[in-house]
Length: 272
Length: 103
Image (cartoon, rainbow over all chains, first blue to last red; front, side, top):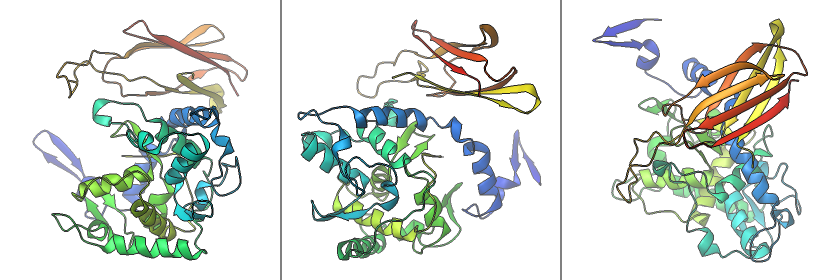
C-alpha cells in the first residue's frame, strides 16, 4: 500500500483510489471493519424500544399495533417488510411500511394523522433520540432481517407505482435541475468518499443500498428509514419537504425496491 | 426500558467476549441549543464497571468524547456460566446496570 507523506498528514492509497464504490474491495473492507460487527449497532436499542411501542395499547382507542395488517395478516410482522411496498385492498393504494403504519395508527389506534406527521424524524443536530415512528419502523423492518428483498409487483397498481417511481427518478426539478439520476445514474460514482449506487438498473448497487435500510447512521447518531432517506435526498436536491408517507415517496421506494429484488435484507443496517 | 443491552459469550483461549450497548445522550457540554443559544449542559457516562461473579474485570473512565449510545466490547479470562454485570454512572448521578450469564 503506497503512502504519501504530506505536511503532517499521512494519506493512504485508499483515499486516493479513483473508484470507491460498492463491490470495490476497499469499500467492502472498510465497511466490514467499521460496521461488520452487528452486535455493535446502537439501532438494536431503538428496535427494542420500537417493539415495546408496537405491542403497547396506545392511542385514543387504546389498541396495540398487533391488530394491524402489514400485508401478511393481522399481527404478523415477520417477513412483512420484505414484501413491501405492496397494494392494500382496504386503502386501495400501494403503501410502503411507513405509510401503512400511519394507516394502522389512525384507523386502528385512533391517532390523528396530522398530529403524527408533525414530528416524524429525530433532529440529529439537536441530539434528539429517534421518534416513535422511527422506532416502530425499524422494529417492524428488522423482523425481515436475512430475508430476500421481494416487493410485491404483480398487482396493476404495484406496477403503476413502479412506473411512476421510475418517471420520478428521471424527472429533473427544482432550482438546480436535479433528478435522482443526476447522482444515481452511473456505475462507480462517488461524492467525496461516499459511494453513490447506480439505481437506474436492477443489480448489486440497489440490492446493497435497499438491503441495508433502515440503518443506524453514525453521522446522525440515529436510526434512519426509507422515508427519511427520500426526504433527505429531496432536500439535498433543493426540493420542497416531502410529506411523510406521500404517494411520491411510496412510488420511488417501490421503484428502488423493484431494482433491488432478490438482494438480501441485513437489518438493522449501520452506515455513515 | 433497560438502557443496557448486554451479551457475553465464550470464545477461544479461555476468554469471554463481552459486548454492551448503552443508551445515553453523551452530551459533551460544548453544544449550544440552536433555539435558545444556551449551552446544553454536559451529560455523559463517567464510569463503567464490569464484574464477573462479583469480581471486577473492567473499570473505565469516560468523558464527553465518547459518542452517543456508546458501544463497549472487551475480553476477560472466564468461563461459561459466569455472572457478568455491567454498571454505568454519569456526571448527573444517573446510573443503570444489566446482568447476564455467559453463554
